[in-house]
Image (cartoon, rainbow, N blue to C red; front, side, top):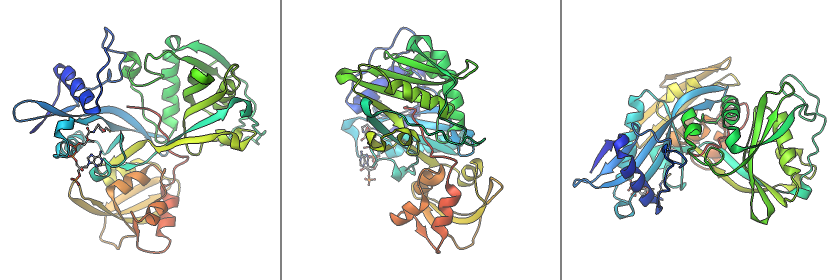
Length: 411
Ligand SMILES: CC(C)(COP(=O)(O)OP(=O)(O)OC[C@H]1O[C@@H](n2cnc3c(N)ncnc32)[C@H](O)[C@@H]1OP(=O)(O)O)[C@@H](O)C(=O)NCCC(=O)NCCS
């Protein structure tokens, strides 16, 4: 079996093989090649596994994204995608061979982080990925959806969210692509764990709603100066459920105004917010705290470190401290011990032979890297070993981000 890079000429065979791996048949793209979820494939970054007699049996791809690290630091990452092996060729090591090939390829590009969404949670830990961001669905019966936003004392850090001075305008999806693209880009730069959505995705209508051509209403929020600072993309389906694909806002006041808008929609029984960050204040803004049912509380982005010192020095930090991390990477057969020293928001990370504070696998480091998983939880789960009292608590405090990392981009 051979793993080979693809070109634009391989698009059809790549798409067919991938869909067969998932048991699906591909939709027909529009004339410009857009309007289907795979329209933004970067065919110079994808891989095909091919048998000795030339039959394609496996696929793996990568998108070029930016991931916002704690401290509002967008950094280039690979978004691994389109992973599939034909049912006839499973459990023979095809995926393992593609993963090995791909990780080497990403390192050769100079990348130090890779991310993916996992179809099943048992697949990727062995390749060094760990779940790093989480998301949940909130379902709120409309008649219980009154927002009682207290008149909080606004400060420079936490501005008043109660009194909105902006406006909400309802637009059709087809008429507000540029506004959404611009608002999304501002939002993702300030949200740890968020991924960029390259222009190509919007232009080719690739992915899921609201970028796909699925019919949607879009409520756009503008600030007091008329500048768009948020949108909610939604549809009303059977049983009068209003489903919000995503509420994107560059500040909490805009988010509150959009939530109030959809929760006030006539002829609707319930409102479902599809992607809500674990620490999002929406639940706390409801007059009735129990009105929101939490469903599909699940992992979203999985993170893999390809270069531990570069990754740890790239993110922002919010507390001074020092930790020795003993990191094992069984898939790549690598092992390193690092002294992590954080001062004034920046980290230094160098090899050391000092006694370790924590021993952990590279997938566990991926889980704690963005601040969405407490190291002490993984110590208690038996994944991470703490070598001295207080080491886990210090790691919790050090790795924490300014807020929960959250990603809602599907790829
Ligand atoms: C997931 C998938 C790509 C695995 O491909 P594969 O070629 O069978 O994987 P490998 O043979 O390299 O398996 C490597 C190891 O992972 C394990 N593994 C692979 N897929 C697994 C799964 N879905 N659940 C549990 N374990 C799995 C294998 O048992 C094997 O373990 P071992 O090393 O202890 O023997 C393939 O089953 C598939 O195409 N599934 C449907 C599409 C899909 O879910 N793709 C992933 C999208 S994110």
